[in-house]
Length: 180
View 1 (cartoon, rainbow, N blue to C red):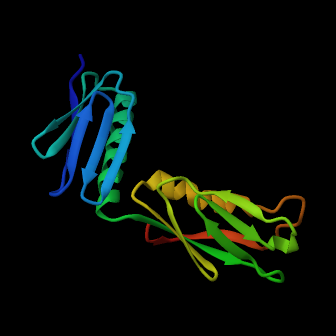
View 2 (view 1 turned 120 degrees about the vertical axis):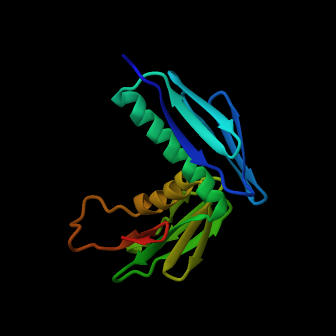
């Protein structure tokens, strides 16, 4: 026999949530976050100041999906209250690395003495600030902020050289306020 499961998420004051089938839009005066969820065997509805996720089946698979959707919605709400911030450190031993941000692209110049600059794509919605050897990436969407930080880190991956000797690069030092 199967029981119904449900999970409730509180909506803080000043934040408006709209649900249209699997599409969830979270708004406030600072901006909006939008995401589309696959809701097979799940229902998503707004009751008062709560978002309710329900499942008719009580099994592990549905519970995992409910928890994942709940975590995404909580991150969407949290991102509008306080932006997600990633900090990266520029490390070099011999050749000084310089970074220029132009629009949705960043140029990493003089990495390991290379003549051709490396390009990094910055997803739309992410704000990047460079202060000498510290790069700060902020966004109201945790996935956009994380992807922008990962793009910087991946652009300076060293291949075909000994990682113990060539330790230059850009590395994530803190994620959303937590030191790594």
